[in-house]
Length: 395
Ligand SMILES: *Cc1c(COP(=O)(O)O)cnc(C)c1O
Image (cartoon, rainbow, N blue to C red; front, side):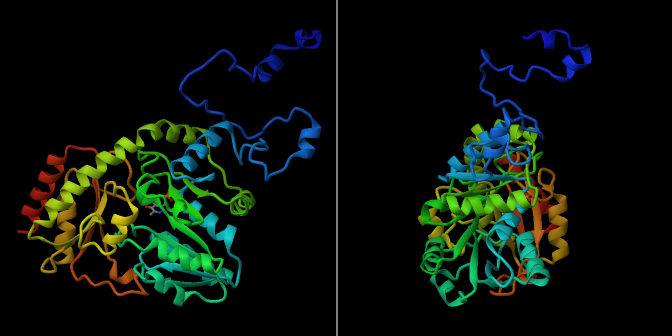
């Protein structure tokens, strides 16, 4: 310390705290590096700063050591090279649109897509000159017939997180690659653990880290994951232009949950698969839409491409029950909470009106669809809860 620091006032010493506390300290945790201002060592570094270089620190909005540590792990889970963290899964979807397409471009969206993605596409079509059209999620190689000269982006979701139809990702990617069209997949269902679309040639994988990665029902976050550097830079520039960033505190919550995600996913998977098989035997249920069950549309693709399913699946109740009866069933459940999202420890349930959301492919079922998310409760208790609610409301 020089003389000039020893003569400073008490308040100056408090403001200019020691910023380098880490030497000699080691722990398993990633420090929470909260920062808006990032300090440069000299002006030459400021002037040489290049937003394209992921190794340079520029401003807390773009990256901190905490967000960089999380991004690196999120990319690694599904074999990507780059991940850009987003304040929500929907924000990651939005980043794909603004990074890849411009007015006049065509976008193809599966008919069973996560509904806020559909609304985002509708909005860009109405107000920003995008040409959006929808396709049958089971179209497979037939996607080639829907591709127009201006098609720039094809969205995929595998499986659709309500209808559980599993698309032929390989066939769609083949058609897109032959025409230089970017493919983006919403891979939230598999958490990147049970399905690795980047290895099949999909260009961008989108994750709602809000789900299994957070695992606590208490964080909103998303990510776009890529292999190609140019594509990464396109998304990164759009993310920067839109002022998108994530808090180091939120990142540290996800970092804390990430090491046990695989164990949780497998536990959800076991319970959900067992209860799906059991529900298939129930007279109240017409169809169980679980991709691992042979009558789920796209089951063959699931068997070919996936190693697991996690906690989410849907059932179609027998059409003899009115929508009001199914509402009563849902509300009679005690262990299944009514709410959006999933990936936490608590089981969830939600009825969906699928038929009215589709425009490209008719929905074949007449009974009411109810989606279950199987949490980490005891399987026998979840089963007993469903049985009890059925007995009260569907007798
Ligand atoms: C939840 C979800 C999203 C959006 O995630 P948020 O963080 O809630 O915005 C996107 N896609 C799918 C399939 C989801 O389930």
